[in-house]
Image (cartoon, rainbow over the protein chains, first blue to last red):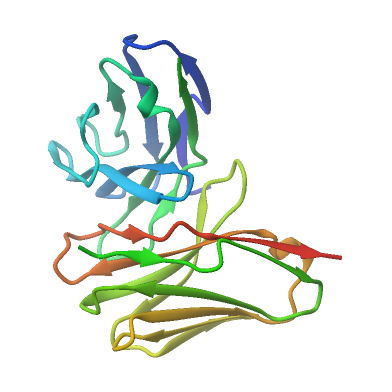
Length: 112
Length: 114
């Protein structure tokens, strides 16, 4: 089954404790992206990657890092999480010349 | 800067009634517009994609129209069912944005009552 998976699905952590949210897709897609969703603000893009070793900032990259060492994986790293990073995070991918993006189920993060 | 607005933020209708969801955007230089459905715990699912050269797209009970000049898109869902209860988001890709970069609205939460 074609899908985008994220782990963990739920995470509670404390300020300053480094964490990584993993994202993996099995569709051989070149393009992957991370979004955060906050009430009343819609989804905002954090980082995206056009292919392996090619990443770029989205609209709200501050406080986040990403890497793309393999085509299927695109982890999101919070080096020193803060409470304002409490949010619902989505990973997405798309391939070739397709315009449709496939989204993962989301990771709900609470930073205390 | 592109701003995407969805009004109303929430909508409740009885089963069988037609749904009309609105999306407006400030920059008419768009490449395409997509409508997504979001279910709790399941991420987003793409419903319809309209290219900038198109006026509408249809899939089953869903029909989406696009009027670039007025900066508006409307999603129609005919004969609503309780299973249509979800949050619906629109997203635009501007012609000046990189491949795959989308600007999302905040969504309209729909409840269809039996």
